[in-house]
Each structure stands twice: as C-alpha cells, then as structure tokens.
Image 1 (cartoon, one colour):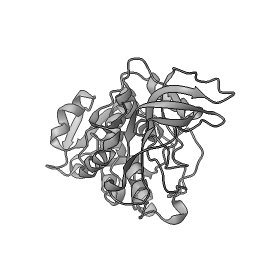
Image 2 (image 1 turned 90 degrees about the vertical axis):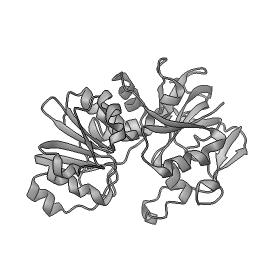
Image 3 (image 1 turned 180 degrees about the vertical axis):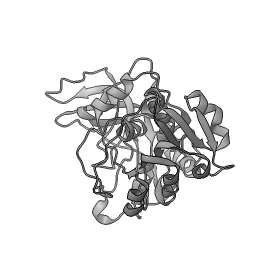
Length: 329
C-alpha cells in the first residue's frame, strides 16, 4: 500500500510517500480501506517530535511512524470475533487518540479498533467525514458530553460541560476553524445565542452556520466588546485566553482548547470556572454526534495523500476555514 511515513522529526519535508505492507487487524480491530484522512494539529506536533511538550506528558511514539488519526473509509477485513462491523461497511473514526500519535491514517489501509469507529451516514461524503472525528469530538467533549474519567494533566478539576439552552450566550473564539465552526453549530443546536469571533472574511460563513453575532478580531478586541457571556469556547487558547475572563458573567465558564496560564485566585474573585479536557477516541460519542444531524463540515482544502507535505504547509499558514483533508485514490 501507499503510505506517508516519517523517519526523522522536522518540517513538512520529512513526510515521505512510501510503499509498505498492508497491516493486519488484531483482536477487536478491522482493516479499513481509506478514502480520506483528516489533518489535525497533533499530526504536525508528532512530525516535529513534540519539542515543547515535557517528556512525562508525551504519549509513546516511535520512528518510523505513519501519522494521522482521522479516517473515513470502507471496512476491508475484520479480525476473528468482531461483530460490530462487517466487510463493506462505511466507517469513520478518531483512531487511538491520545494514547498513540501514530494512528496510521495517512495510508491506503489502516487497522482500527472497533470502539473508535462509527458508521458513516450515506449522505456524508468521505472527505467531509474524514474532517469530522477529532474536531467534532473535541467540540462535543468540551460542550456536550465529556464521556470519560481520565484526568487532565494541566488541572486538578474535572472538566464538566454545562447545560446549554436559549438562556445561554456562548462566545466561540477561532470560530471559523475546525473545532470552532463545529462548536458554533453544536451550541446553536442547543438553542444558545452564539457570538462568533474570527477575521472578517468569515462573517457570512459563520452567520450561515447560525452565529447570532460576529466580531472581527482584526478590527475590534473581542474581550472589550463582548459582554454578559455565559460560556467561552476558546479554540485558540494558550496564553492569550485569559483576556476572555472579562467577558463572562459571574458563574460563567471559560473552556480553552489549548490550556494557558490562569490564576485560580483571579477566577475565584470573578466567580468563573476555567477547565479544559483532552479529546479522546470514542466511536459511540461520534455516532451520537452524527445523530444530531445537519452538522456541516467545512473543508478548507484537499490534497492527494502523496502531497501530505503540501497539506502541512497549508496548515502552517493558518487562517483555516474548516478542515484540511487528504484524499486517497
């Protein structure tokens, strides 16, 4: 089979297209013939060797490795005893995350634990399906249902999504990106009033997805113009996330997807909660996410599998609208 593999850490140029043996599914697994593979930030973190992550927090990964965790395709073979899926079933999933960074999705075939998979709806094409798992499960586990008891290495508190309804105002920062545009739709689907923060070129797109208010961060500081917010989903996160605390009502919450630096004393004084979580593979949750219906997966761009390096170069330029996806002939 054709696959993308890296033998050393570095820039996009270390992603090599190679011919490798087709893997064999182990217990509890199926073999998936890949039609499309999503591109996500952990893919380039793995490519770079995760240089900024403390050794004790790095998941195990060994070179050479085939990156990629988001996949959509067709079941080609099943291991003995597997009854959940059969040959010919169309499936999608987030594979083995975060326990392994070498999910193997950048390939023509990949083995997948059946617990990580959901059935692909007939009306969802493979490219859109491949863009959904990691971003969709991140939005789901932050906003709707955590679904696991694994502690976060960055906080003592357990993340617990709060109920969303017509009396809730949700601000989504980075609203045009992969997690952001799905978070907008999930919050709106629960009836919340949604404030979307992105650059001006994305306004029409986000209003089509249901945003009630739009803030162009290139023209205004969202933390200065947004008020009386109940929940901030900050998909950008990091050190700058703390600025959104001033937008929150007392009793409000800030969910930074990429955890930053916060002062517990300040949070307590403001009467707000700051928690995050680590997205985890979960086929059952992915199925529930799909059952919500009407979720639009925006595709920023597609690249053939052999051009994975170009896909990573596109990701490095930023300002994405939705997801980057690799297509497999």
